[in-house]
Image (tube, rainbow, N blue to C red):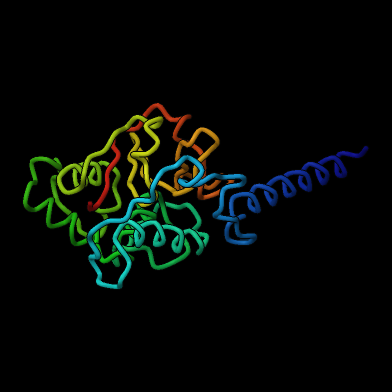
Length: 224
């Protein structure tokens, strides 16, 4: 094989690999993905009663817990592409997003504006947040800030993933550097799935991950 043909072959191989990586990275945008876990079970399969909040923040006739869960599903149905960006609008206004955007959009659908709420809590208790200069456009999109905010404002629940009745769709689960919404779908052992956006290479936005994580730092419910 001539040197010229060899170089051409290498270039073609490189382009094919690059194209494959691009399709994989953007598969949610181009192909979409099901938000329903395969073969998942539900509360009724384990004799667990669905939890419904007594609060309806936005007055739409749907309780907060249900609103948050549905809001998370509505958000992931847009197939956001994982990418960390700063927005002067606070909330992303394009096809991109990160893990905190799942939670922010889910709560917004229930009538809770995390951008405003987190900013107000930071100004009320700045020492708890350890932020030199608050920025309303980004502070609510940082996991560390949401850890503090939910510890201040939400109902704290068990972090034992095998206490299955205490994990309900619409709860919030926080990891060391990640956050998501608890799903109403469960695996064969009754452990809840999580609706989240962790990286560009997830197989689905709704996954069975709780048992494989050893870094859960919080489990919260917005209202009882």
